Length: 169
Image 1 (cartoon, rainbow, N blue to C red):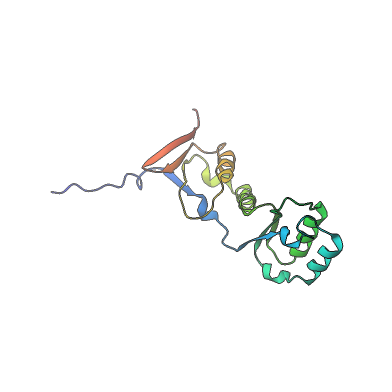
Image 2: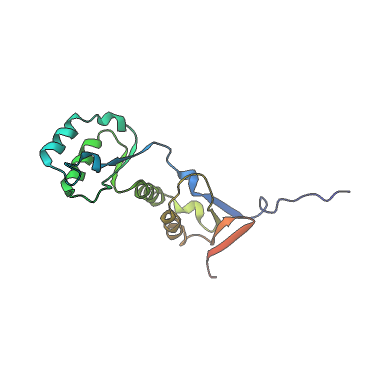
């Protein structure tokens, strides 16, 4: 008689959470203001406003947009504001910074909106490996959000976890 293989993980009281499941699939676009600079060193208001007026912002419809300047140039605050104002009717979200910063902002919004009740008294395993760009600070924000209600939080896979938090009795 063969021994039956038992899936102890499936039968456990562990509550797996994969932050990738919360990933927003819409397009991400980076606008580099270096392409809008005068002589590669500064933004001139008149030229910038003219370029903004001619630019087709409909291409950013329903996208998440990050705006920054990768050149060491003089870019006044109003330039980012003007770009954000032009993108607002089209883009889902506009941030100033890199695409990595954009991901952090998106995940912070997601975590801020989480209903912690689904995690109450759970033994949470936060999955860490995946294919989508989940920023490191999303893991920290998740822990901070659910720790007050969770029984325990672990990181990794059910077969190999690292304890992060355990509620004391």
